[in-house]
Length: 443
View 1: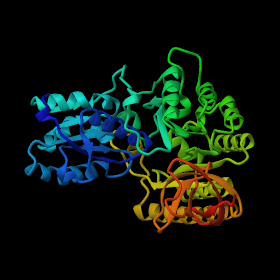
View 2: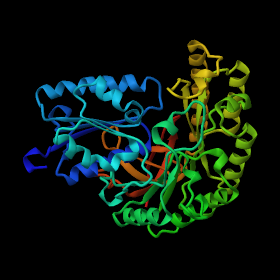
View 3: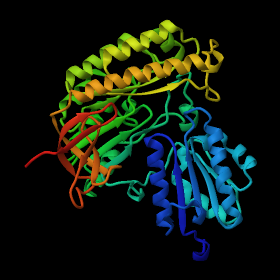
View 4: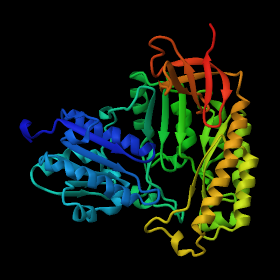
């Protein structure tokens, strides 16, 4: 590809989870190696990438709506390339090329490392679809353009072998593929050398990591990463309840740099709903696991995912979910109305819940959770937390950051403030439902 044909600016829009965020960082790194620099103005870009998520309702409509906006820019810049990436790209494939004439290529999440090749081939005249799940992938972690300077994300396992009846991830991310412990540790050390204090291990079922062709499991990996010099904070997401072992629970309590925060999706407080979801555990299983984790780490903040309005969910089922919510006192909850996803089993189960019923249940659950969070956060007033500074606040002369238990803290600063990525002791003055307000601790 000649220098004259090399695009100079890129615009990248990202939807979805942390793994999508990291995929975007991987693509940005490849583009910058080609001399293509970022822009916030899509109309001036030479390459536009939409990194999509297919988990939520109407994902395809949102993607095609965004592509409809971007395709107009090609009228003024005919050489512009537009690529659809991510989970909707894997799902739509050739359909996307047929539907959007201005779309140049489709890139699935398992083939993110091939972006440079796709751009070169498109410049030679091909319209391309690169989807599917190759057994071997090139994961050049030293070429990733990391977003921010405070948290380094490390994928340890891709894909999912579960068959939850509501979830499209096995189709869009493919079967489980684990990276080796040696490669993971090399990436962690690389991030620490560049000044990252916090490491976040990523996977659709992060605690199902196993050493390829070996005996070690996630407990061994946690132990090894936590011992890397310079790792001050270690997080991992997303854990699957039935994949936790006693050794993994023990590790959460063994290393003080493993953050006292865990996201552990329960999805429902009803055993009958969990069976229809094919989650593979009961509510009591989840209760016992939560209790074991809190015994191992008494300061643990536990968050979760909950779906309301799942096919067949009765009012009694929903009340059981509300009872679990009150009992376990989650620090935060990501709650959603059920939405059918293409190719999943749940739409065939029958027993659809009326939209107005699902709406009412969701609002009731969110209202209850707001009060729980308000109470939990007020209990933190007067405490001092080491806050990792992550950005500037909305109010003038304020910054924000995260506590080890993953709560957002806003605090006033003087002058230039604290450098992002640094840790600052903060006294909590007020606990709000969704954040904390504090001030720098004296001394």
